[in-house]
Amino acid sequence: MTAPLFSGGRMRRIVAISVLLLVSAAIAIGASLAYADDARELRDFATLALGREHEQTRAGRIIKWVKPVRVGVLGERRSEVLPLVRLHVQHLRTITGHDIRTVSDGEIDIAVIVVARLDRANVAVHADVFRRLFRDDAAYEAYLGRIERGEFRPICLSTLRTRGPSSEIGLAVSFIPLNRGPEVVYQCVVEELAQLLGLPNDSDEVGPSIFNDRSPYIDLTERDALFLRVLYDPRIRPGMNYEELAKVFPAVLGDARRVLRRSR
Image (cartoon, rainbow, N blue to C red; front, side, top):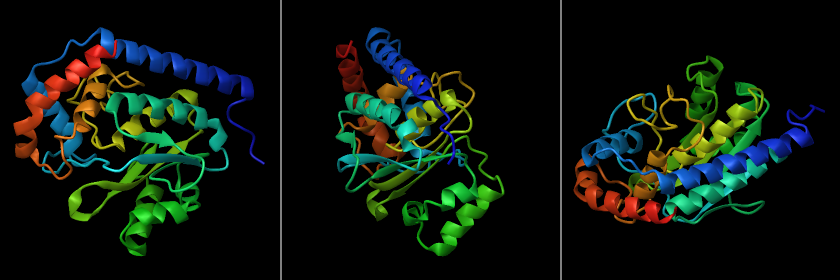
């Protein structure tokens, strides 16, 4: 049997730190809303929402969940990460206003899979869940091959599937490795779950943001929270392109700012 990475005492400290970080983030969102101008906000939101990681482009379309989202934590060592996932899901529900919650059984929309390390063997163990994201066995095996060859070089790994032409997200999986330590586990949970809500791109041009790989942030910044709130405004519809987004963005942005200010 593999020994737990985090002892009971250390895990409790991690959860306590997580609570403080999430509370601090919520306070910061309400207390210091020094936003950029609207044009920059649109540019940065479009970069995160319409781009795709490893493909720096805005040629995509808005993707988001429409139905309620149920998050399940899987893996033999899931108990080591479950408290953190629960806290962050609550935080995301508050920010977005969307129905997102953790479940212990039943249908899962986002599977957070806890693994000892991120490699082909540990990913393949969960083929019953992960395989569902791919159109066929060939595509699945090709993806595993890319993991084995180190093409992604990720700290953590997330993938999602949309529902055909609707651009509604239908299923998502995130692999959280334990071997890199508790700080990385925390950052992976926070960033990957937020991206799986529909901000799938990373960019060094966007900041301050946890989605900027060169930034020091391990928690959502106030701009990240703003963009998540914008994304889950009903006027932002799955399938929107850049031109459609730009028409409604100023009004949605203003409303999102007011909502977050009231949350202080």
